Structures are given as C-alpha cells and as structure tokens.
Length: 158
Ligand code: FES
Image (tube, rainbow, N blue to C red; front, side):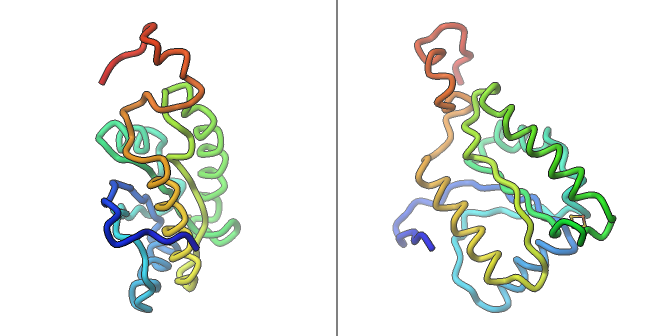
C-alpha cells in the first residue's frame, strides 16, 4: 500500500459513494480505525446509478484534483441494476475525459461493500496516492493527450 508522508499537502478529492455499500464500507473503516488519507470529501448518494457524469465535471471544474465513485458490487445494488448503469456510463465517460482536457487518471470508479473496511482503506489510499503523484489539477489542461494544444493553439486558459 503506498504511503503518504505526514508533510504531504492535502489535495481535494471528491468521493461519490452509494449509501448502502460504499458509505458503509467507509464507515466500517472509520469505526475500525484503519489509517487512511484525509483528502477525500464524501458525498453520499442513494446509488452509484445516480451519479450523473456532470457531477464529476462540476467537481473538477470547481477545483477538485480527483474524483472517486464507489458503489455496491455488481449484483449487490439495492436498486437491482443501478451499478450496471453506472459502470456502463462511467466507463464511457472515463474515455471522454481527455477530450475535455482532463487526465483520465484523475477519475476512478470501484465497488466496495459495507463489510469491506480494509478494501475501502486500500481503495482510498491507492487513489489518493495516484492523485498526489499527478499533483494539483491545472483546470482542464493537464491531459497528456492534449500536449499539442498547450502550445497555445485554441486552448482556453484558466
Ligand atoms: Fe449501491 Fe446501487 S445501491 S450501487
């Protein structure tokens, strides 16, 4: 598990978690006092299927350095198919991020159940380390795929 040093500056990571599984998993990790980074700000939703990709764009436009979505494992969704819709939608969305000038490594989705405190600890620690390796986001202009635009040809400056 990657380690963050005590002096590492906290970044802004937004987590959209489904109420029934991943929020419970985060709670289980907290109750179990598992050590985890403090960069994540959790927004609780009824289901991962409720995550509109515009929520993610809005978070990134508002200054988030990374966004994590987590729901129930496939076939465990409390609304039967919400996470299947989420998986399909978010997988496509992830591949569109570079078109918007966003490095796709700044977004991740996963599944964590309410009993998986140790898994939650690993997910949040790994994703936070990945965001720290990327550093603070530079507003829609840090995608390697858009290097040719950074020369100043038609890219909007923040
Ligand atoms: Fe958790 Fe649907 S209720 S993903």
